[in-house]
Image (tube, rainbow, N blue to C red; front, side):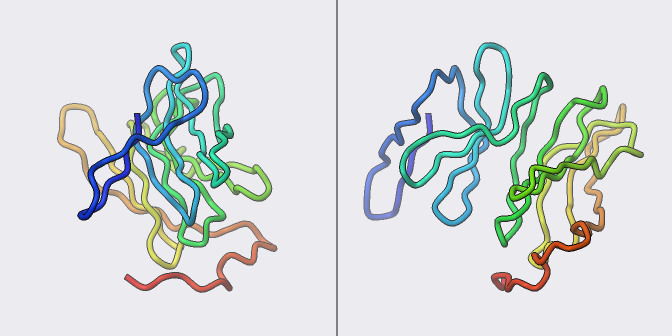
Length: 155
C-alpha cells in the first residue's frame, strides 16, 4: 500500500486501483506518482494519475524496478533484467523509445537518479563479491528533443 503523510496530519492510505500484490518504490513528478507494482509474479512500473487511475508505464516479460523521473518529466530511468542482469534503462515518456545506458557493464545496476540538469544519471553497481559503488553515465537526449531547453528546479 502507499500512504501519504504530513507533519500536521496522520498518514492516510492512498487507494490504488488494480490487483497488485505489492506496491513499492514510489516517486512523484508533478501530480503523478510512479511506483513498482507486483501482479502475478511480474514486476512493472505504473503511474497513479491525478484522476486516480493507474496506467502501465513499463511492464514487459522482464522485471522493472527503481523508477526515477527526470526533472522535466520527460524521461523515466529504471532498472530491468532484460540483458540477463539488472541494467539501467531510460524511456522517453513522450515517444515510448527506450535505451539501455549500462549495456557495457556486466554487473547488476540499480537505483538510477537524474542530475538536476538531466545530463547525468547516477546509479549503484553491484560487482560480484564487493559492496555497491556509485557510477555515473552522461545522458544525451535524442536529436530533436527539446527537454534541455526547459528550465529545471534548482537544488
